[in-house]
Structure formats: C-alpha cells, structure tokens
Image 1 (cartoon, rainbow, N blue to C red):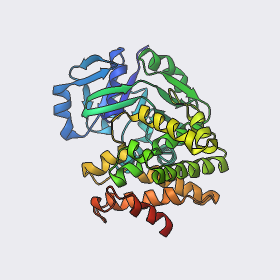
Image 2: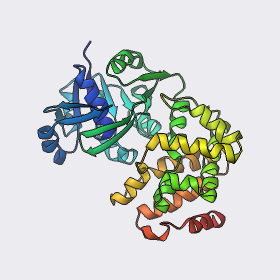
Image 3: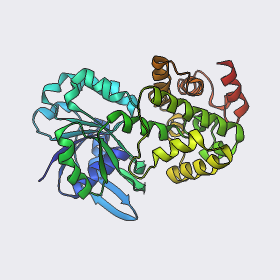
Length: 344
C-alpha cells in the first residue's frame, strides 16, 4: 500500500525520513521555504546511510501549505526545529479542516500541546527520532548512528505506518504513553548540551571536569525529580537505554557513573558538537533551550520541584542567543558559570 506523506522541512530528520520512505516507493512531498526550492530540486536528496549512498533526483517540493487543499495526504511529518513552530501555526490553524494527522517529531515536551490547542488533539501524534543524523546542507545528510523512532500509539494511523516505516529501515516502535517517550528523549537531549554551548567546550571536556560533571548530574537529577512528581517514567527508546541512564544518574556513586555517562554521551554524539552549540555559533539567533531546559523549569514550578541548574542554563544561554552578553564571556570560563548558580 502506497502512502502519501508531506514532510514539513528538508533538514536532517526530514530528509532522512522522507528520503527513506521515497526509496520504498511512497509518494513524498517536501514543504520548504520558497528560496530553497530551486537548489533542493536541482541537486536532489543525498543520503549516506551506514556507508551506502542514495540519491533521489528531482524530489517533489512545495513552498506553501495551501497546496494541501489540492492534494490528499495520509500523514504530515513535522521535522522542523521547535523554534519554528510559532511561524507555521497560523497556516496550520487556517487549514486545519484539510489537515491529515500530524506526526510531531520536534524536541521538547510542549509542541504537541501547542499544536493540539490550534488544530485539535485528534490530529496530533507525538514522536521522536533517536537515529543520529548529520546535515551537510539542506537535503544532504549522513546517518551517523542507526537507532530508530518512537511514536505514540494513540491514533489508528500509528499502527498503519508501523510496517511501512520499518520496511524503510526506520526501526519504528510504538509507545502507549506519549509523555514517557517525550520526556525520556528530553532527558538525553539535555546531556552536555547547554553547558557545551555556554562554555564552548566539547561534551567530553564538560564531563571530564569534576565541577562541571557535578553540574550535569544536578541538571539530570532535577529533571528526573520533576518527572517522578508528574508520574512520568523513563522508558527505553530505540537504541537508547534511558531507564539504565536514569538509574546510573540517581543511584551510582560518581566514580562509577562518570565513565558510564561519558561513554553514553560519546557514543551518542561522537565528535559532533551538540545542537545548542551549533545553533549558538551559527548566529541564527535561535535555540531550543527554552523548550528543553526551560520546559523542565516550567514543569518544576508547577509541581514545586526546584530546578536551579536548568534555570541557570536557560537564563544564560537565552542571554547569549539574544546577544545580550558576548559569547566570549563564558567561553572556557567554568568558574563564572558555577558562580552564576550560587547567585540565582
């Protein structure tokens, strides 16, 4: 059975999923900015998956969601960065009567609620991707580590796409509780992310410093306490033993937890800098810190769990992103960041 998919964004994740589905003969349309269409269509999609090169010539692309009224899609896959959500909400709301279900693969734990408020809860399916994908340029990606996808089993189409995605090599697994899968992904997204961006250090350097390692542990413990108060359980995601990670953070002594967490973060990112660092030093003036660390702070406020480290990371990185403080202020200066924790 051939499905029709609309991929919202031809970045790393959108190219990987859309390209993989297209190779299996499904009809895939990419929604991208008008200024990117010509280059994307002429260059095509390029994917390096486990050392094998794939190319999709002349992918079908559109630049306006209005075209959805003329084409019937089975599923929209939202693969944009979280900070782009506000930009696309007006069109989604305006065209909600024409929308198929939307599989939301954005990081963080709040996008699905925002979408549901605008277009209806029955159209929103939470999900996440654990496969590590690097983007060379738009439509040109390398899969660095194959893991899989997690999707909430809350809509009939979730079960329908299960064999389709797995035939495409995407290793899809279904989960009964959406909050468990989204918060579990948030937990691993936090590791060595904000601290690396703020201090301009690699995650390995962060985890090698005793004081910064303590800060990282506190960040994760805060998040786990918030999850526990909200009755959200860590769950293993495809290729990622999140339950074991949570146990290591909470119960193992530092001398045992440190090498395990360093191995975990090294295996997850390799030599690549984390997303917050890439966004900060790209100069685009946007970051997902408010949707990750900031979401922990907001949830902590609601359930009366203090989150000082997540609050510090959110405040400082937001200030750097906005240009309110120079990047060099905190670069290679852990003591200044640690001082900020005592002042918050």
